[in-house]
Each structure stands twice: as C-alpha cells, then as structure tokens.
Image 1 (cartoon, rainbow, N blue to C red):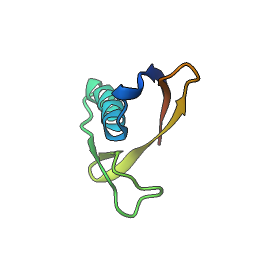
Image 2 (cartoon, helix red, strand yellow):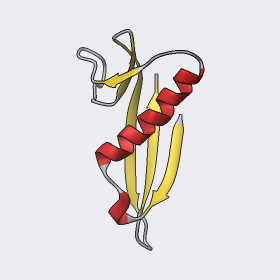
Image 3 (cartoon, one colour):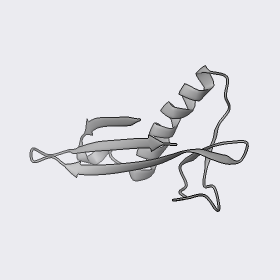
Image 4 (cartoon, helix red, strand yellow):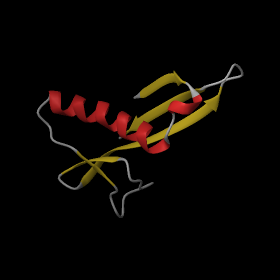
Length: 82
C-alpha cells in the first residue's frame, strides 16, 4: 500500500508520521476483526519500530520517504508491505 500526502514544514515529525500511518493500517485490520500490535519484531527482515504484528509475527513493514517541495513544505510517501 502506498499513501502520499503534502504537509507544511512545521507539521512533520518522523515518529508522528509513522504512528499516523500505522493507525490507518491498524484500523483496516480492525475492520476485519484482526488485532494487530505495532512494535519492532526482533529477528525479522528489515526490522523497525513500526511493524504491524499478529501474535508476535511481523505481517507488515512500513517505510516513508520525504521530499521537499520547491514552494515550501514536504511531500510524504508512506508505504506498507507484507
């Protein structure tokens, strides 16, 4: 899944952006009755603090790229992959 959005410079925080994206992904799973936890998954490929886990197993990893706009502000591309 890819999610792209523009923001003002003063609105961006790496941790807030990841947490917001994980909230969106968690809501998707909750809609289908699946409980996910967001945390690192030791031993998993490309581990990070913003993995979605089911029963301790990583099911989704997340990443983001931030690009500066010429007119000011930023564009954030957030991605999730399983």
